[in-house]
Length: 125
Image (cartoon, rainbow, N blue to C red):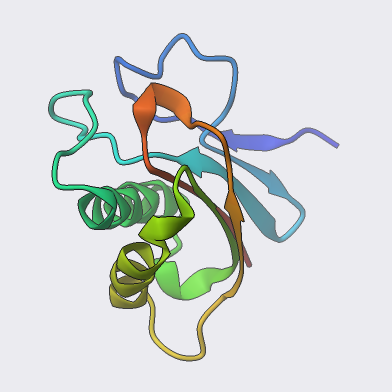
């Protein structure tokens, strides 16, 4: 069965070997997003909360291209370069969703692309 993929038209991502998202039946798997500003191609400034806000703006754009919204997200995986950023990420995360919230895993990692402090991937129904 051929996979339907979503691409992001962004200069910083155009040569990378992955899709923004892949449909598998009725499920959409989104690749991890960091807080890149689409206008500049650079990470947003302001720390983990600003990066998290930008990530959800980016995810919302990918979802809109698939006819979906943040309300369709059923699971997220959050990767933090510093677990000390958990509270700030969590506050920004709560702004993106309404109850009932998606299932979530949060993992501390050694490093993230481009020096990001947070990366988030999502599974969508």
